[in-house]
Length: 202
Image 1: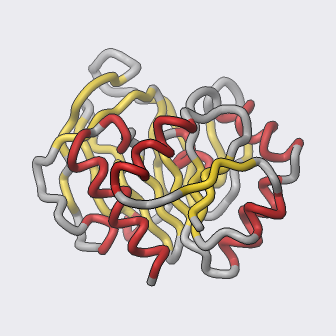
Image 2: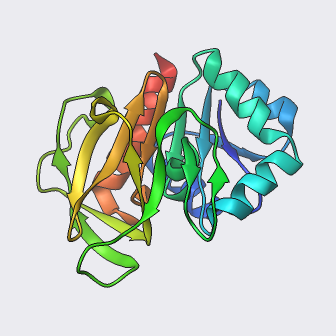
Image 3: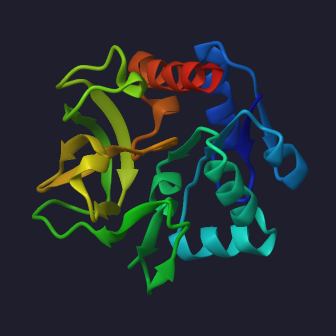
């Protein structure tokens, strides 16, 4: 079972509906026992990094996520969820994250208006089953003011250009992150969710 983690800051129903359209049953839960029993974990998120980590730590969900990731359970971070996978964030302070991917989260400092809201194209850097059926130039829907700055380029599966190139899809071992909203990205967004579902089944 794929469990979508409810820590009070996610667009949970739309993500769950997206998985259903992609052909995968999911469970939305904040119960540590249910999260610990999951075959795959999805960490969604909308809002501020610091508050998100506070919520995860308050309910000790951060420890459950780290334990399951260490056991090889596929973990998918969506939007803010991608950012939480990194070591730290500079959003309205200096906050530590889950530390599953080395790097930090920083504010866009390019010439374009922040936040980025709308459709943007992917530039696929390397092939991976998560991106099966996704091509250079395919459009996905983004809403964010901050972006990941990984310590290592080899975690980047795809980038997008918003005045600067930023990581749009990242991966380290069994940990995956997508900066866009797949549930709002039409057919190709559902393809990403289906690809993740198949990774869980492997």
